[in-house]
Amino acid sequence: MRLKKTPMFLKKCLSKKYLCVVLSIFFLFGCVGKNDQKTLNKYSAEYFDLFDTYSQFTALCASKEEFESLSERLHERLLTLNKEFDIYNEYEGMNNLKTVNDNAGIAPVKVSGDIMELVEFGKEAYTQTNGKINIALGNVLGIWHNYREDALNGVKTAVPTENELKEASKFCDIDSIIIDKSASTIYTDNCNTRIDVGAVAKGFAADKAKEFLENEGVGAALLNLGGNVIAINDENKPTWKIGIENPDLSQNYIDTFDTANSTVVTSGNYQRFYECDGRRYHHIIDPDTLYPADNNIAVTVKGSSSAVSDMLSTAIFILPRKEGEELARKYGYAVLWIEKNGAVVKTKDF
Ligand code: ADP
Ligand code: MG
Image (cartoon, rainbow, N blue to C red):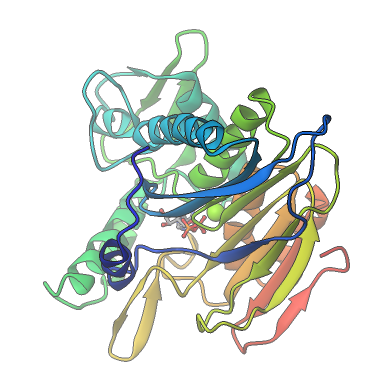
């Protein structure tokens, strides 16, 4: 298994603000037999090379060997998804979203089923959230990304000008992304438009991980993919206890709950940000202002699909509470807000 467990590495991740453990997890009821009398034990693994964040996988297995083989195959599946959805790096023998972006205004690009499905979901997210989630916003998000990297790497600390952002926003039309299902291609018809799937990719990947684990016949498992959590329990018992981390990163949890089968996703302003002149500039951008959204500190969404929870947590983070509530109600998903003033509010079903 390719697992890096060095505390130094973790420290490096933390200092770069790459670590994004939004939810902390505890195992609640141990050693549950599945359909037989075999005793199952709890095993855990950590992954440091997925989606630019920290991930943790826990499952009940009959032996350490069985778990390690499972974890290795899960890790491989997630690494493939990571490469496919990467907009910064290219990989030999594969067309990924960087290939699609590099061919904007030039040619349609043949892509895998995973990419087709995710981009289709991303386009649908635009409609569902009234444009608050826009996977064609890459041009604007790229500017914020570069300013953040420069600030965190000590190159320069500045804020993009309104003009710069407005110019970039001219090339963020969702209809520029053209999906041809029969040819399995994606084409961006404007050479300046860039796709960024950051708002939905981890949730989508977590659903794919769940599918993988269920196909493997895993009875009880928990995956935290950088704050996108999926819980599996085939006996539908509340096997897992989930704690919602305090944005001040203290040991006190904002809330805890037990779950059997659900997905939980948090979007917050306290993991990926930089500061300039005493103000925090984080990574979730309101497409209407082109600046970081400032209604909330964090939003956690709980529901059956992780891709939907991921889409909703980002959109509801951007929206004022009433509008966020309406959106969540449409899907029947539960929400917990930590509002700008620190107030914790949740829907009745959370
Ligand atoms: P995280 O990736 O930290 O878990 P989110 O799921 O909320 O958090 O997604 C944030 C990412 O989504 C950003 O890093 C950026 O790539 C992208 N993004 C930010 N704002 C928007 C937006 N309004 N529409 C689409 N994508 C966005
Ligand atoms: Mg999201």
